[in-house]
Image (cartoon, rainbow, N blue to C red; front, side, top):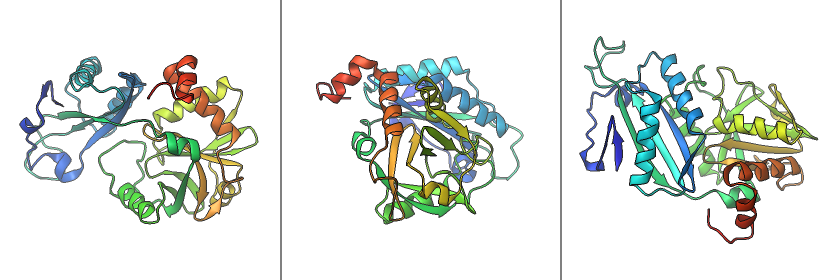
Length: 290
């Protein structure tokens, strides 16, 4: 079942017009929200960012955030989603093809669910990444549908048997193709400032809160490729990656080649934020499936 504007319908009932501006121009915005144990994680923050992204491209969402929230809750219950994600997208709607905004069009909202478990193997053992030039536009703070540069970077990483591509503009590292990136030295985390060159991730904000609670300093400051490669630890975050250590970049081992102490501290705190300390202990002992 899919949310199509204000209705939950069968997938085969959804018909996308070939003149939908999302299809022809990427003229729209989206969010991906995680579901753990049948409950949304940081849902309000995701919907607020959806609204902000829409406002930045002068796109009027035709429903209130409360209405959308209630419909999404109904959607995961209808589809019996216990662990997974919800993808939500809003386009400017259908109109005769012209570059400027149409005088009249109605935004189209769509959302669907996908079952998926937590990336335990990656968060436990770490991943490898590549470096590639950041060739995206200068409004990366907008979570828009224009993702072709991200797709190309991710595909390059896949071809090299890596899980992520870390983007850089010149010598300055910005973020991953679908994640925020952090370096750790001692008890200090550094990550790119939340300006127009990166997406201010929802998990990123959670990490800031968890770091503060665990007396770990966070600095929003640019860092270079060399600073990153010589750091003690590196990790990335996103809704789907959660908090994932990066243990190798372009065949360069990071730190001692295994997840670091700061990263593991944040991972433990993240698990407790999701499930509570008791559930986390059960998960680690393999008594429950999450």
